[in-house]
Length: 233
Image (tube, rainbow, N blue to C red):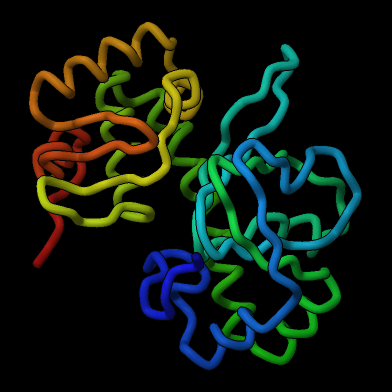
């Protein structure tokens, strides 16, 4: 089931909107459901609709020069996918696949544009979300040059925890279980390197991995490893 009104991730589109604007956005389109592995959007297609994710996780991938799929990002409840093609009319730049059961609202491009004109708050929030995604991609590129693989992975896990994590007894749970090849793609490392780093993080008591979930056991210590400032009160 979709999560409650006040439970959207704080950095997601639904999380940053005021309740009236959020309700307007949630009232658009029709609800659809996808099973694990279903393709929501396909790279290169010319369709223009947008999905507003209500529950579950989806992976964003694109084809690289050697023909393999490269993981670009993860999207979760409260996020939109497909907004770039809806706004600029260009073909889809990536494929979006459900990581597990996903519930979403499908919104046609014209309907979304009408809301953006009527609700400047939504327009500004969506612009900010897209800008944050570009900054995230730029940080990944800088991390490739400035940090070893262990630090890059720690930085990635901290960011995933901030956006998609939920606090539970014993740590912060990241509900989307990424495979080792996908983690390797996101931080620009070999799979064998990821395997070694994960073993080290588990041995150091920083991380616990299980079926479809990753638990950060000591977030402050992971932040220090990631060369990130301590969070304020």
